[in-house]
Image (cartoon, rainbow, N blue to C red):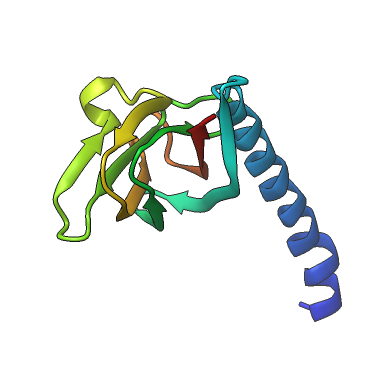
Length: 137
């Protein structure tokens, strides 16, 4: 197969589909941000297939209230996310709350956390997973 053909007719259209899926996921995650929450300005997203786990690192600052919002296409409940502290202690998983699309929490002391995200295999096999983090004004 000619490289130019492959790029033009396979990869470029595929890229547009991926971008559209991630944009749709981001729009779903944005729905959970009310006027009282300000985004940290980043979208944490990953293309996930089957058992893959995306990993993001962020710092939560003491004395703040945060909201984490998730999206996968038109859904939020298809994404499982877990938050771990620096010692790998599990701080939260939305799996305990029917894969809730968002979670609000307060931080007393500044901590760097790892957030793992994976698709709920019973609901979705692959797709774009988006997490957004915001803090309360």
